[in-house]
Image (cartoon, rainbow, N blue to C red; front, side):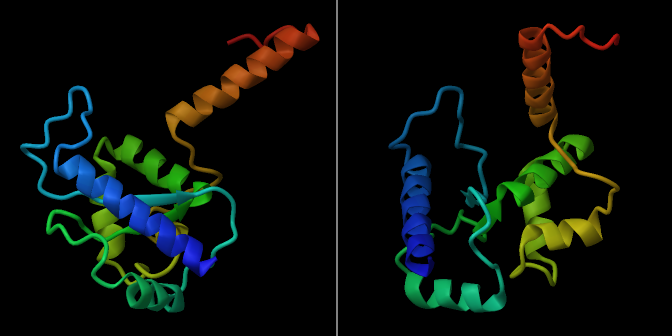
Length: 155
């Protein structure tokens, strides 16, 4: 698992460097005002335990072969369980995800899963889901009701 993480981080580093160098055109993306980029590696599923020992391993095996551009901020590894609450909080605060990542990396939780920081810094009851995820759930439920011939609930 460790080598796979290193390989993915190197791949993310190269992709980030290509975007910053202008090698990858994105419509309507103006890199002129960009001061910092916060690379995020999103992992599907659990499988990885983020502890300080993981970050020592990453530093030892990644070294200076990745994320060398000074505009690249601390890298973040998240699972979907970490990512969704971060995006939901950013939506709620109407602020960029980069601000939350900066706060997370400035905290004592920076070498632990972001969900640990979220629980302390942004406590909530129940799941935190971004609007687009809630929209997907609603669309899937509506489609299922239609296929089953169930009357939709009144709004």
